[in-house]
Image (tube, rainbow, N blue to C red):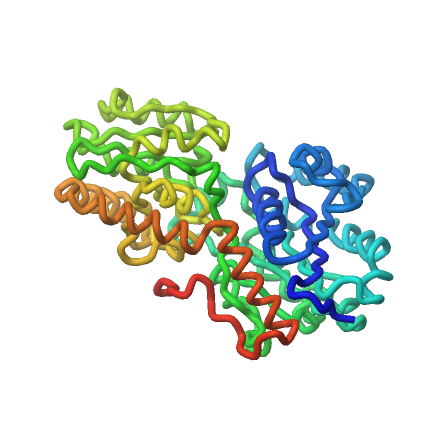
Amino acid sequence: MQNDSHRPRVLAIAEAANPEWVSVPLVGWSLAAALREVADVHLVTQVRNRDAILRAGWRDGVDFTALDTETVARPMWKLASILRMGEGKGWTVTTAIGAVTYPYFEYLTWKKFGADIRAGQYDLVHRITPLTPTANSLLAKRCARAGVPFIMGPLNGGVPWPKGFDGERRREREWLSYIRGAYKALPGRGATLHHARAILAGSLHTQGEIPDRHQQKCIYLPENAIDPARFSLTAAQPGTLPLRACFIGRLVPYKGPDMLIEAAAGLLADGRLHIDMIGDGPMLDDLRALAKRLGVADQVTFHGWVEHGQVQQIAAKCQLFTFPSIREFGGGVVLEAMALGVVPVIVDYAGPGELVVPGTGYKVPIGTRAEIVTRFQAKLEEVAAAPAALPKMAQDAQNYAKAHFSWSAKAHQVAAVYDWVLDRRADRPAPFPAQIPDA
């Protein structure tokens, strides 16, 4: 029986949802929390998130339920750590192990809430995480049988490694990525897609992996957004030299911190640019040595790891966010920079390339390592030759990020999808945001 009030009753499934972590758990938490603006939400998550959610002021058993899957998850996580062969590496392995263990979480979810779903206590079920499209759902078919719409997403991941970066791929221990496409043949994938009433696609690549027969239920919705409280500052944009740029992320090969330093060497050497490197990782010592070898060590500040809530204190002193990463699924850090009025300079590939639309930043075409360095260098020289263009671009980037990519805006975008699957509107919602960059 459907709720008569305007606010739908939503059972939000987010195995990973934690307000004190980053990446996928922060996305799961942030979207679930924002949806409370537009719906009556009960969150189902994993027990490891319980204490952090309690500290956020939510009530156990009322606002959320934490399911204990540790008997299965803990040993499999240890196995994944061994197979990854290095901290922060082999994320495809972690995703694959998660896809194997995740069904137990949904089994417990149905055991706990199946009767309520069948009884019409919820208007719809929305699986927010896992974000990966490789994790099939036991709930989709069961919800369909109960007559309750099942929504999944935003789904994202699996962006192919670009040509010419096999060395970086191996250093990241991404050996499983060579056969990632096999997930499409996994049992349950067809049923999951068939029984889902709506599929939120977090990237154009992920949407392209969904079979044509299901495209009519797909809606483009990037999964990342910004918390205005965490990114409340506005960068100074005087429109003059010298410029200050920042890099934010793990110091690993595919994010290209070495390519950035090489590309910026000329600008750094003559004092037209200073770079703040925010992040830690296995490349730190090599990057310090590279800056010293190029004679620009004084113009590159290595801040190391910085707590997420403090990143804006450094980034807001910059005019540019320089980020030559060649394999970002979502690229939430790009939105965070834009929200501060820091103009992004990124490689036009995957997540960042979709988030930076004309007038909000600069995009460098993907290519080989040498080509990216050359193109990044040329773009930085171009920006430095006309810094007066930065203030307007920074303002447009900030307005764009806050209008379309706050968590509140995201919640209202999802609410339109809820209305569609609940037959409260006839037309399928347009992709969000309305202006999609060129694919």
